Amino acid sequence: MRFSSQFVLPIVSMVVASVVSPCAVLFLLTSVQDNMEADRQAQAAALTLKAKIDMIKTTTRDYGNWDEAVRNLSLSWNEAASAPLQMRSARLAQ
Image 1 (tube, helix red, strand yellow):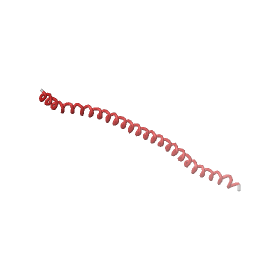
Image 2 (cartoon, one colour):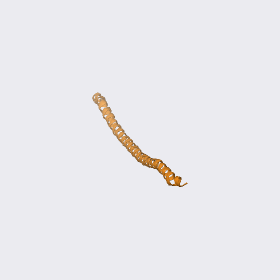
Image 3 (cartoon, rainbow, N blue to C red):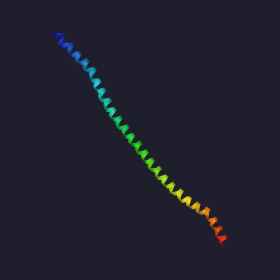
């Protein structure tokens, strides 16, 4: 009885501690690493979403500018195209 309590119990305790300790450290480190990666992914998703929103804003603004330019161009072209007809009508009226 004395042998087992003096030698076996401490050796078993050390073996158990040498197995449990690395497992606990590994679990702690992997959970910290997982949290860091989750933060990185959330930041990447936020940056991607911001970039998409900025692109949509720019595209919408460009469409608005082009719509206005086409309207002005159409009016100018229509006026230029109808000017010879108006001049011909004015000559015929004289």
